[in-house]
Amino acid sequence: MNKILLTMGDPAGIGPEVIVKCLAKSGHHEGVEPVVVGEREILEETAKALGLKILFCPDDSPRQGRVKVRSMDLARPGDFEMGKVSAVCGNAAYHYFAHAVESCLAGEAHAIVTAPIHKEAMNLAGHHYVGHTDILEKMTGAETVIMALVHPKIIVSHVTDHVSLRHALDAITIPRVKEVVKLTWKTLVATRTQTPRIALAGVNPHAGENGLFGREEIEILRPAMEELRSEGFPTFGPLPGDTVFLQALKGRFDAVLAMYHDQGFGPMKTVDMANGVNCTLGLPFVRTSPDHGTAFEIAGMGVAEPESMIAAWELADQLLNPQPLRQG
Image (tube, rainbow, N blue to C red):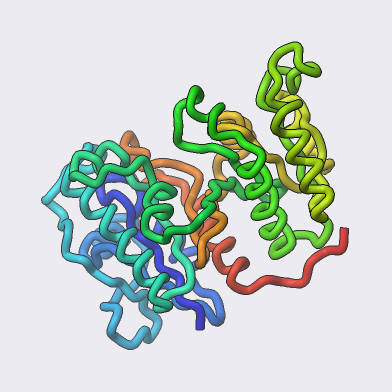
């Protein structure tokens, strides 16, 4: 049986709420055992406040219709204020996630679905990372870790992610582009189609206009695409970043490579915030997360939408249990 760990994220955010709602709507899959890494007391209080009849039990107890929780005893109700930045919550969120990663690396679990962390709170607690991806790179030692947005219609993979735009330009290289294409191709073959159609978004306006607005397309993207084609990974483009996502959403492409964070996240969050899933490619285990943050402004109000968390849970299950694919 595949074990999926759901990390509770920052207790002061909407993480506990969307996890509880997810478990109530879509937490029971044959052949999959969910285990929440967080705090049982917080989850029970959240479920009670929402009027959801979910029973929780310790991780070492028989399930018997209950959801297992691996309590870390790092935060309790009353230790923090909902919707406020807290070192207590930042520390807890970091350790929930780190413990889940260690469990997967040890072969004790197969996937992680992560509720949102708050970067400021985590750094306030002395854990100096810019997000989940940064932690994963350090803990797993993976050579290539890719941040991808998985949407029902397309996958958007990022050549660079949480770096400044100035540094992103230096990080867009031929080897990096090739690595991102190959990992995206592998994910598409595992989940959607045996004949992936991947487009590259240009770095510059109008994809550079043949060097008029920049030469990254000429000196980096096109040579990378030529090498990829010779290795059996044909791609399309580079295409202008202001139109390539629309073409993909209309069905022309299965995936788009965004060159920097906002180039990919901006269009996809505008189109459909609820159904997007952040998936980390290149790891020795599956990791997904909802495409939203801690939403401190609505934390504790009971109004957080769980659709993205449900989509993250469903994708993790799909990646662990691939289904027959379409041929093209």
